Length: 119
Image (tube, rainbow, N blue to C red; front, side, top):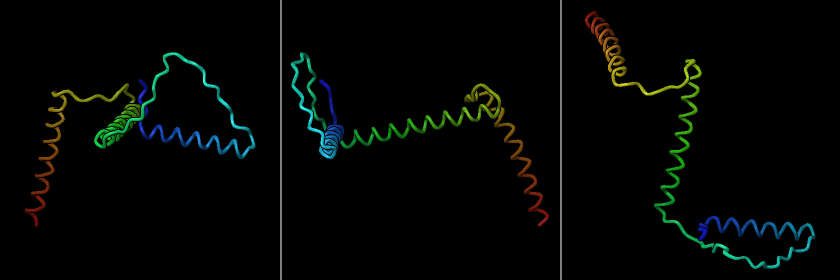
């Protein structure tokens, strides 16, 4: 069975009405469709969504756009650094970076303390 959500079925109805209005404005006769006998035609079933499902769908789409934006941003950063890609640092690299940051912070703290002693 093909599942058609309520919003989709409403959109389809609106499109059909617009087509009919446009044909009337142009003076074209309505197209007459002869029903053809088809085998194994899927039944179209209107289905409503739970509120939680629609909220989760919106959140999912939001997360996907954020991921896409992040990928684009990282590609831009990689191109600025002339590297192939920007990757997450390993634990060792993070520890090395933390040591350097600690040294910089200690120097800054000592300078601040010297200024405070002068005051």
